[in-house]
Image 1 (cartoon, rainbow, N blue to C red):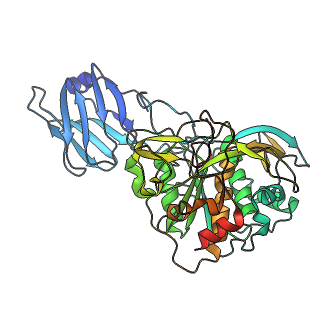
Image 2 (cartoon, helix red, strand yellow; image 1 turned 45 degrees about the horizontal axis):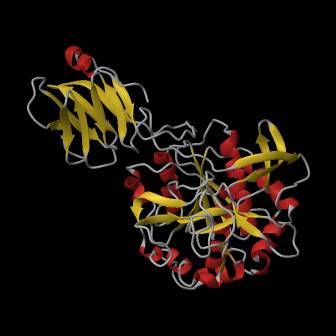
Image 3 (cartoon, rainbow, N blue to C red; image 1 turned 120 degrees about the vertical axis):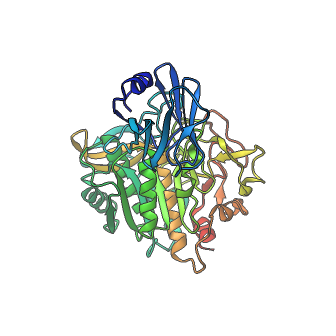
Amino acid sequence: MKKLICLVAFLATLTFAEYELNPESLVRGYISTGKTYAHTLRQPIIQAKAFAKTFFSDSANQSMSLEQSVESKATAYRANTQTINLQKGNQIVARFKASSHIGDFSQDQLPETALNFYPRAYSPTNVEAFASTSVPTGRKPNEIYYAYGIDKVTPTGAGQTIAIVVPAGSETLVNDLHVFSQQFGLPDASIQFIYPQGVPTTHSDSWALETSLDAEWSHAAAPGAKLLMVICNTSAISGLVQGIDAAVAAGAKIISLSWGSVEWSNQMSYDSHLNINGVTIIAATGDSGYGTSWPSVHPHLIAVGGTQLVSSGTSGAVVETAWSHGSGGISKYYSKPIYQNTVQNTFFRTTPDTSLNASGYTIYMGNYQSQKGYINVSGTSAAAPITAGLIARGYATRTLPLPSDLHLNLYTNPTSFYRDITTGSNGVAATVGYDYDTGLGVPVAPAFVNAVSK
């Protein structure tokens, strides 16, 4: 966002200038000696302070006016949902427009007090190494199937659509999926693309990696489900929620989000994009240890944390511990939802709800740092799309309408379909029962799928 310049000069010279505001956040900037505070353009209360005077509107569609008469006689008003004009008399002296940050894939997580703060997504995925150009060495689908009993689940997710909303995308994804599927004996994926803000023209290694990870492992988890790739032309939260809207409009009932943002004071302004009856949204909690991220902390979303499989292969005992990088904790803003009343004693929403291995996955990429081959990656970014795949398998045989909120299924008698993880720490030690490391635990796939189907 361009630095806002002197309001004194605006009023003195009546020179017209145009500047960007962030529609998705509580914007903090400076205008000369007076601070400017402008609430999100999506909100009904808008105010701007200068010279200790307050310009305000109590309705999104009404003109702004001075809180009290002042010598400048300046007036400001809301022109529309994307623009605020500041006037002196009948002449516009400044215009503040909403910025959608198209083509910007920054992942910087700035404090809300920063001048150029706006909520944007980061990718909770860590690249461990290029394994080989031809031979995968990380976790393979059959290991994950064995660890969670997915190999004992009959439904494949046929008839279901998993929407993956992600910034930037990957221009090699279709071939990446094909190579991955051929390597591990999976059918080729049925895949469709939507571009809510137009096709991105910038390649981003980190978001391309995220795209391939999400698509390949959701397909591995539910090979019969269709993939709907919603590729957003920005990492700004304001653009990503447009992607969620597009997925819902296309009919998706399962949406996977492997990105997050720091919580911020105005995050509830996006609730309408997430509170959708009959649509299950799964979100990764992050890879920063103890703490929360948005949107996984939203009460309507299934928040998926991380574990680490200590054992390997497809035989013997499965040994698993909390992943040290897996995020989970207490929300700063969301109240405790009713489904958590019996598992935690804070007054706020806590995460995660469920967890799954987040360490050492194999993916294939055709263009990462100008190379192609198999990569070993870790992150709750993998746990979320696999959980989405398990839910797709359950919904595939469900005869009743889809639940308005799947949490009610998951938190009802969870010991019958979750395996409790009681060792390890993300900064807070795992314990018996619900905790901030792994939530309710990891799914026992046959019982989990059965519970979701009912």
